[in-house]
Length: 521
Ligand code: BG6
Image (cartoon, rainbow, N blue to C red; front, side, top):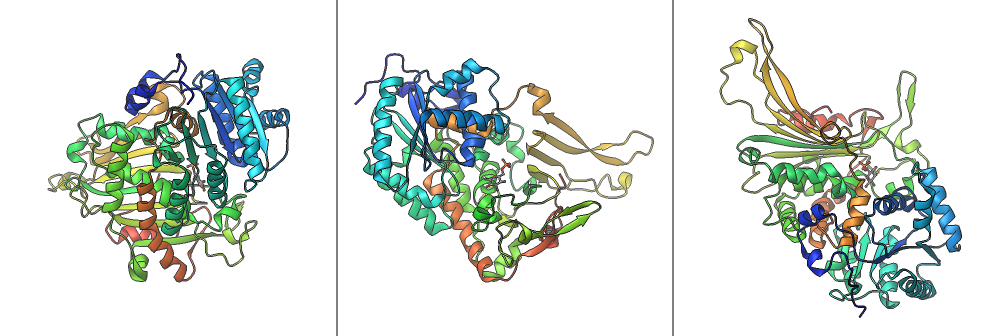
């Protein structure tokens, strides 16, 4: 057992502090080696490397830190460092200061080899021993699996066999961060959990959902639980319905290889949209810590009525696929025209659902979710639409009913919160008009929010699992999504929508059936 250094920044006590307390004290993790599997891949180059470097530059990493890249290619440490710098430049993160980059680069090491070859893990073992000696990383390891899900079981098993995993509770800690997709249905998610649990304890597993790392998503909890004015109206008595939209303008880009096996429901709804829903709908947790929060989120998922069978799925869900469109000079290809997409692909690029959170707080309040690619705007937002005023006193003035209040929580872009309410247009017989009170992050704080991956990497290094999905949470989400996937697989074609529009008309009908319409971002 390697003793903890005297100067260990956050000790065991610090690690056990609730997340909020640690957030305020700006903890620096204990000495550690971060080992990234998939070190030459897109995710590492675009997201992970820049995020780790930014943490380093802000002195948020310990002095005793190393990053070990693992991938198939054979290259030297020097080549890996040079490529790391090149990809920082390629993706617009060129280091401003050479000296800082040089201090960072000397902490980079590389191990090449196949993931199913025990020799790769023997080399990794030796490399880790060297790193512990050279960088005093104290035997603490954070493994990051930035690799396709099919390779995860192999890597987890090889890490176990190679003696590279310290048991939970050991002073030298080992943790593993697993990227999404975490399985492709309930059965495979359970199998992945079982495989990981052969080697890691649940407390060592960090299942990442980058939406939880977004500043505005975390602010949802602050908004609800640090202010008293929302709680009295945050329920079925006042809320008419909730809409969650995550729309993207991009198409499938160069990711058809993955997307063809996934589709919008697996790619976005099972993870990001259901995460947003749980944060909106959950009860106040007993404490701001990982288990209290995740317990409440799991309760929400368990309260959602499952949508099962062809008829219910046809009534409560919409599955769409973008098709070729021309608008003026702008022509957009259809999904089936994209590279590596099957010409008869039935993969959905749009999904909309009506969910019922069947508990004391939310019974009877529909939660509408929609997400899609090639929609008119890139927006992620939650809209809480309140009930209309109960008595039409002002109909005489306006001529028709006042619009109900709405609260719009904008996750991205133009992060902020707007509350819409009715006001009288000035004048002797002024009608009513909806106006808004707006809070804008950028204007209010004038500072840049940390990138989601920065927050999540730092939290996993600190041992704070609050913003990571627990085993029962991912399984509960898959339990909701899997029957829909099964019914869709047995149904016909997805409904077409012209690229650049808000999805199939059926998505409008889904909300119109309840007398509502989608909020246009
Ligand atoms: C990823 C999905 O998880 O989230 C992508 O795999 C999607 O398909 C992306 O484009 C959207 O994330 P963001 O942060 O851009 O909203």
